Image (cartoon, rainbow, N blue to C red; front, side, top):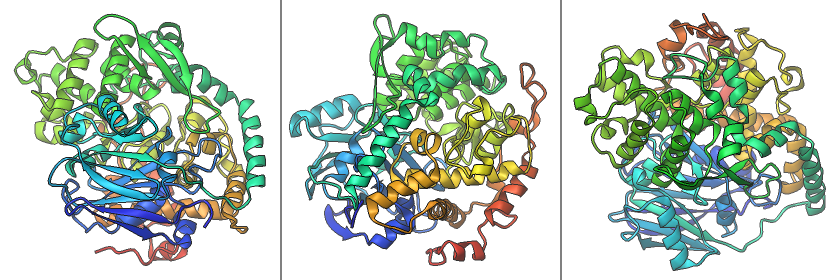
Length: 619
């Protein structure tokens, strides 16, 4: 077949057995790859399985466009039952690992069982073997990568976990290319539970495409188009931090655990501050003309480090949410999260929650080991990052995440435990842009900001070309709760499920291309002459409903599609969004109607039949 390699690896870690398995082209036609095909295989996991037990599977999957040379098409997904939510979990990453893995001759890997000892998987040009990783256990991401490259050769690319994954921090990540993270939903936690330290890959096989000449033309057209795109220019200059000032100016920057929406000293930690004080250069992932990654250095002092980032979400979670305006401390904490292998969003959000608990007297100095865990205390924030990753002191409680921490503390803390379904929110306050609240509440994986990437449309007023033409432009007031927002969220979720399923970056595939143009690229790669915009959207809708049905099988329903009381009942005290709360229910009703789900948030049999999903194993 064209686009895919047509086979995956199945690795039984309990026995050490490795087998190859064919993937038929019709499966790619239905699910595209990455999170879509990964979700299909996840239904092999038995209902009610412990996310950290041997019955859970950890799936690495590339997309149809991964490694074809098309701009930004270098991504892969990790999929498992999430130890944070108990529902469907996935995390997507870029860099070069996905391409290097696919060039070994496989589209994906399914890890099963639990290894009796630490191991890593080596995959090289069609062969795979498990090797002992005892000498790597306990080491950070950077040292693990260095050691494996010394042992295997510089051309090997490494995806691995750090101590946070080994210690089963609920929100541990998988890192590749040193600083590219499959960050959310605890995929690194699942990897740690299986005693799988790393996957080292090297491949020279070519990804065959149906029409290489047409693909070259499309690559040239896309690169030329992107070079004139204002979003590209902004990302190239300031990275994802480019949006900080606009979100902050509209009252959407979560501050002091979402008690406020404007961070007063934003000019100390925004994109220009980063560029002026820490920026060394920028870089791009595979075939990327955008180059949004930041190479930074804190040259001296207690926070000295060289790293990539921090990103917008790092500054939001470790900065404004924690009331910290020390950019060097934020950068260092971000660097630590990468080396420990920990999701920066959940890390910062959980620390911010703990800070509010401390200031309310729910946590005391006795609980924290004498640490003054107050908003604005940069040193305490950094100490918490260490404590969480090592599960030391109060860090052992924070390592469970905001939801479980709140359940253990009680005393009304659930009102300001900022998560949905157990996954902490990204740094966009929906009281300033109501559509963001609907996207958080209805994300299959929890408080996710990229399942429906509506923030640029809502906060910045950018057109959203991947959407249908009639809802592409930012036609709505960010404070609006118009039922049409249900359709905008639904269409965005579907489009991004398809973009991600193909292995593309959402900046390009969502914000710089139309769906008909993406479909044209798929035709050139696969030779599927009837794959058009309609089929692109249908694939995305199928993937999103597939993921939802995994959640439904595990008990998900309307009661989980909600937000904390802080967002529903506590108006912002000041700023541009003063007095605003989210009235979720009317938007949710409309969303379910547009989805074709019943009023309990469950896809109807008719919808599943329409999407060819009636064969799902629900037992």
